[in-house]
Image (cartoon, rainbow, N blue to C red; front, side, top):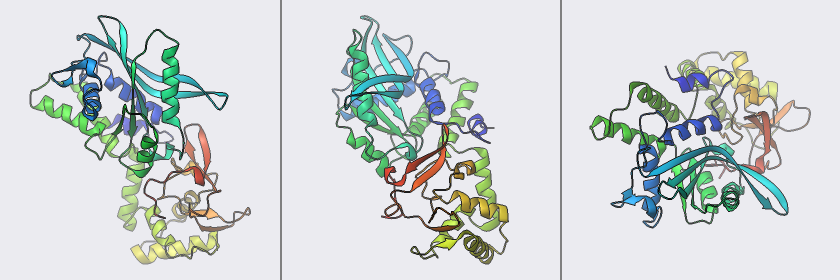
Amino acid sequence: MNIFRILSSNDGSINEPNVSSFLAYLLDPNEDHGISSLLLQELLNDIKEINNEFLSKIQYNNRIADLSKYSGYSINIIPELSVNLEKKGKKKRRDIDIIIEIIDNKTNEIIYSICLENKITDSSIIKDDSQLEDELKGLENYYSESNFTPEIYIIYLTPMPSNASSNSFEKLEYEKKYHLFWDNHENSIFNKLIKIFDKERDGLIDPINNQSSYLIKSFLSFIQTNFKSYIEERKEKLEKKNYGKPVIDLLKDFSKTLNSSEEYTIDYIRNKFSEYVLNLSGIELHNSTRNAHISLSIVNEKNRGHYNVKRPDDERKNIFRFSNNSRKKIKLYNPKIDTEISIYYKGEDGIECIKSKEITYANSLYN
């Protein structure tokens, strides 16, 4: 049983704020998770490796010092901190996912403030957005209103290496920054947690209690599924067993047999897709399954969010678009051409849409 994947099933989805909250819990050495300050120290050591001058006040023997609750430092974790800035003459607010304040207990001074911006999908990375720049400026404003002037660092946490996340990270012209990943990279949360368990196995750290060990291992599994629920994964496995591939992948393959310049009625696509699957697998595709997948693959179909389309940049599912207002004919969707098309998806606040031109495609199939 994996509590994270169960909670993300049905309508549900464990969203970025939920994941950020659990990460904040793991980074806080004052909490009862059993890994003390180990994960936090792993992240900060990576920052130190960028430049040995970074975080120099908390280094010992060329490593980040012990930051547990019994050390000479206090750690203050602030989730969802709202900061304000002025941009183009207008006041603007940004919400920072996690703030990590490191306090010297001898002076009670906040010596470092680490801003962590979390993305669990590349879909929330908006092209040419100034989020990291705004958060840095907002955090500087936040501390200017207090008596503290901590050294500020930016951690950008994204799913895995991609053009989208790299472009967004590099756009921030600031030296004290670090690009961290959830998985598929040496510098990933997944690898750092595995490293902690390896140290426990080898007797290099105190044992982690069973309850915490189970919870963190469940979280590791959730990371590896790209934060998918049990229902999503079971559905894909069943479709693969029945038809050789998940139905959405079959629909993507089928779309490659179509002419990019032609319009097609939805009934025509339904009939031809059914024939395609039958010829390929020898099994007749259920009409309800077929119709649902065609609906969710039409980017400007307002109801596609009800079919669990959670990302506007999901190239796997962004296949067709309505060619006119009658919504009876569709064409193949091409993000390079269809820049003004609204793409609908299920966001945190319900059904949302975004213009095609605003999406940064990580590894575009259309390049």
